Image (cartoon, rainbow, N blue to C red; front, side, top):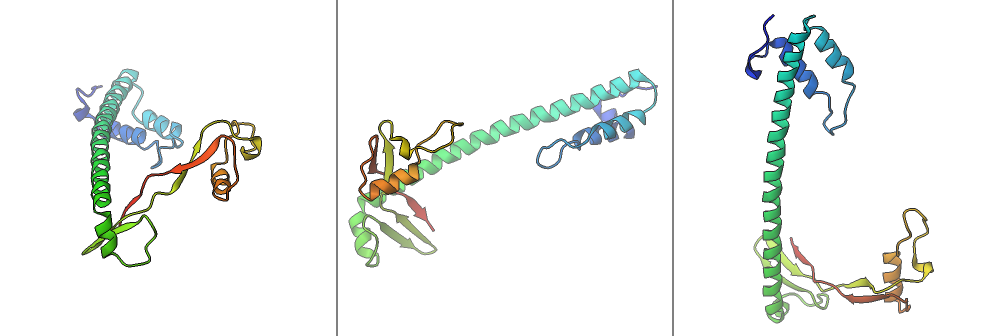
Length: 188
């Protein structure tokens, strides 16, 4: 009756128990029927309850340590992703500013027939386009009930696409108006 001294001293039976515990979730994180697998793995380890508890404790300690390490890595990667997103945003803003400053020259270089407000820069292997600003819907107050969605739960919400289409056709809707939007940047 020897209880493993450390997680590294786990015998084949305890390693099997650890695999059973780790495999109780599918790839999507959905729990699968684990009671049978864990129960049969525990039953195969013998009758000494102290040894079982000790082994389970080591398995639990390892699982907790792995989860803590994964959580720390997730946090680290999330910080890296946030820094990358901010860098992307700064670069996009800089490119937009440069393209707006050079818009007349870029329009003169690009082909005729481009949409008004759109300018393009072509370099080998890439086309950078600053699209014209589209109109965006701004809700300034309550809109009439006919422009609200019908479900009671959740609470009715303005039907933004329908309101925007109606405003473009010239329909006046209280509490709604079209405002200039941001110019979009595409790199193809």
